[in-house]
Image (cartoon, rainbow, N blue to C red):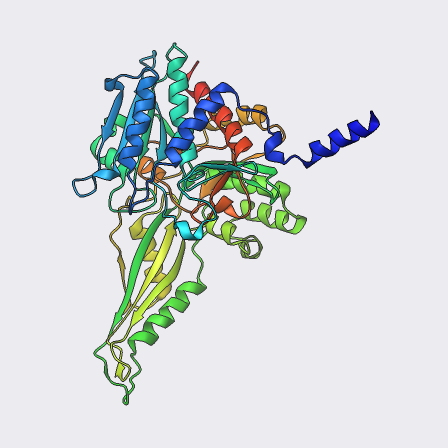
Length: 470
């Protein structure tokens, strides 16, 4: 008997962790099938079709009871019909309650099959993870939000608040952005009191153990500037002091040596307050000093050693490209640099341009904003309201007990920049945990934890239900 028991225990220990996972519930199996179909629909800008993905999800919504009047399918422009999307609406029963919006992008970054260990457009479950391009960015949200709309419809009783779903293309680049198009052309389709979006990814350690949740409120806005110097030039055997390359280079050095001022919003103040609680004593002391006095240069020097924190504290501008001269044996007639800025929420292009000019300290260097599809001003961060933030914190304690939830500002950008600029406060939802390697997002072998995404789905369903009113 003891031998048989020992053999059984040895066999149990040898079973891979993935095989020991709790079997999926029927509702989770339905979600998995939807998720799989979405991931296996190629939506890259080169060879994919967001329009096809939207059509497939629209079919699932209709099968759940949505009628044609509830679903608006739209194509991209005439030269990019494949860049379409959809807006679906579940009507609430309280006319006084303004709608909420669920936003997710269908498109994904490119994936070269030869570089991947697995087919990037096959939905593969292995070792406790789902693999495939977009399983994390952002088809998990697209699948969860569509699945939530289906579950709300099948519940039979409409919520108090109208719930809208927008699935768009172009967030990862390309000539057409569906979120921007909806804001500019069909604001009424997506108008809402607030929107839920990607961007709230928390942290896990290298073993996948959750460390902290993130609630994203606000994001920086991307803006490029062209810096240029001009000169009559001449023969390189007769150098002159007013050299276009030297003047531009000297200006760039001055730009690099002067920081932009620290700006604290409710979001970043909350973020650093929480980070001080879990940092080493010297760093925690510096954070608290900076929160008390943003002009404390000594504290800033300590906190800003972390590149992410440095960027979270201020607008940043950095030279990324250089082009100068026209011949090896001639003095340069022109020198040009691209400076890429990530503007703090609420800052305008013109204000940042003026700050660059001041730091260059050379009137001969022209500074011109590059044309951009981004809003001219980065919208102020949305408020950490009791309704949106408070509800998320309360439910996080139920679903993720003991894990702190930290308000964050994204130093990158999402399609939320268009909605925030249009007056629809947009938040990146918590519920997901990213490992130190980023889970392969935008890189090779993108993956997401099976158990993690199922738990995220449960959390977001309860959260959306709470926001919408049962």
